[in-house]
Length: 171
Image (tube, rainbow, N blue to C red; front, side, top):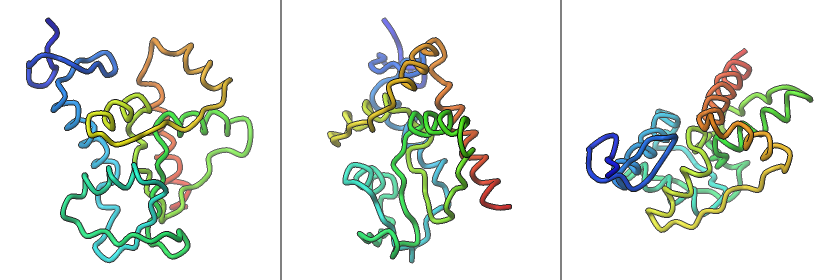
């Protein structure tokens, strides 16, 4: 029998070669997302959220934190970007041949940059939140499928893209 990496209960979800029970998987994903958005929101912020599913996840993660939602991103103090680690990794690889890494807008919050599409599918499924990954460029999908032996690559690329964007926006 396969056991959860964290609590040793029966493992039900495989992620990056490790098995987790539903509760530990949910906690791990929420912890990763919270760390990536830590201290990005203030009480008085007006927040623009691009879609209902990312709004549902954000509401769950921030619990009792009062969110002031606005429809128009130009009226927002923070603009949530629902790109996953897979989306950011693909965008980065495509930009390597072009204009380089785009600096991060100070108002932009990369909500799911520390989570892959597959992890989001599993997480949203556990919470009954409808989620469909963004469509990917066919060539990029093939490129990343060739690297499937190393499933952590999109997460590592995403982490480095965020660091590059932060350093570009602060200079």
